[in-house]
Image (cartoon, rainbow, N blue to C red; front, side, top):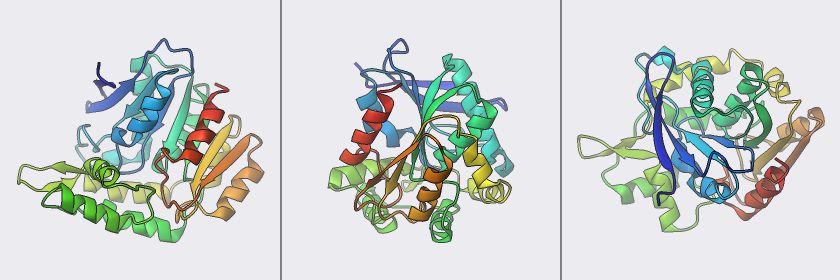
Length: 282
């Protein structure tokens, strides 16, 4: 039996979008929607989704222009508001009315945006290494690779490049690095491996970041319980921002993954224990 079902749906502007569905829609627990990082895709949540699918239904989309979803027709079609609209369509297709969202990095910002767009839908939120404020160093590092390709000759080379790009990830074995590389690159028609996202998304996302008031966005999830997971070595979510989040949110808890940078994989024991305890209430 397959670990997950592979499905597609159409966005409002006609793009074919891909997602994975784990478990039984009739499972007793509240369904979970897993939203990946800016350039990431559904593969990042495979281990977590398999863990959760025993008691709940788990949906993991590839955003437009990432993974197996179709690329947008124009760069402007990568504005994050369209990602939120795509997620709204996905929830309608799946008939999901109350969900828990697990959002990694950019996915956490989308979770906050969903609190404005579909406020009655969110029951609880897990923010993985993201908060209203992102350090300048973290933004610079991320945007440095988002807008350009990094072709690799083979998967061994790709794994080595991934280690160079993200030395503080909590991946330990060669197999884990290889699996992450396969979620980062795709095989191209030229025989090389290319980043598994449309590099044109960098500009619209950078512009959108200047349009929002981040703390107002964070307060949109003030009515639902939040679990924040932070990597101890994160250059995206600072201790100061985490402390302010805890001060401003009445139902806020957090856990730090030791020795880990941005972002935790959510397969670390500390993260899993906190997520299990948090989700058990829903």
